[in-house]
Image 1: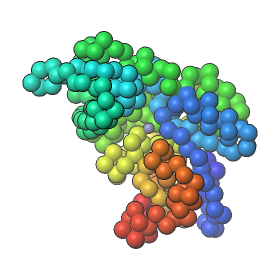
Image 2: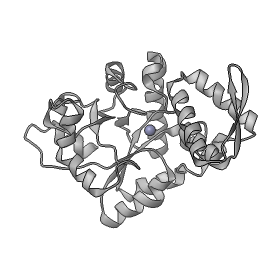
Image 3: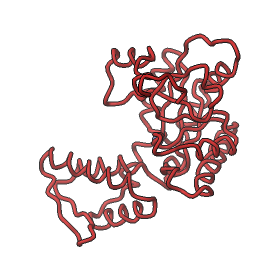
Image 4: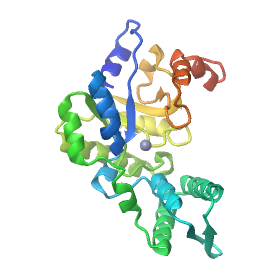
Length: 272
Ligand SMILES: [Zn+2]
């Protein structure tokens, strides 16, 4: 990202380049992506949610996915009382996961945390424990830092939807995660990725906050390729999501051509 930032702010038109960024701090970034990048000497960026690595917070979407996958029956707290769900079929699991994901994604932080605690208690499970093996350990982070191939960015303490927080809380999530990472790594942390990152999750207030906190770049998950005009909005950079939904190389080629950037923005080439 530091190199991308340099190329973006240079006034001459930069050559084509890509940046590989990985969010949250998953262990498979170390086990798989890092090994492959090392083999090919390709640099990568990992945006770390520090609370996940510290074990003080967890990626709830993975916790519920694993929880639903493992169980044949679960008990859900509802306003009308506890409800038991039969999850013995794949379609029942898919429906239950979809419903839980949608509700938790829409809920404010306090309500979501309360719901998750109730769900743990009713079903005698431990979400933090479920997620622990999915998340990178600090010693792996240090090894990646020492390779000189991996740059680290901040990705908040707890992965909240920043837009739903008060300004002070949103700023704290950004600044404190930056401080934790800088202290752990002994390096300045100057790049940031917004959790979830769509325009519903981070907007003008968050872009201004990222700048105020001192990040030199911040990336969203709004679909698009980097263009010279992004020089003027370094705290609202677009990205292309490569995940389980678009893993084939042909789709990625089309993304990289920039063709889908125009489509995502109603055929107007805009900066974000
Ligand atoms: Zn994330």
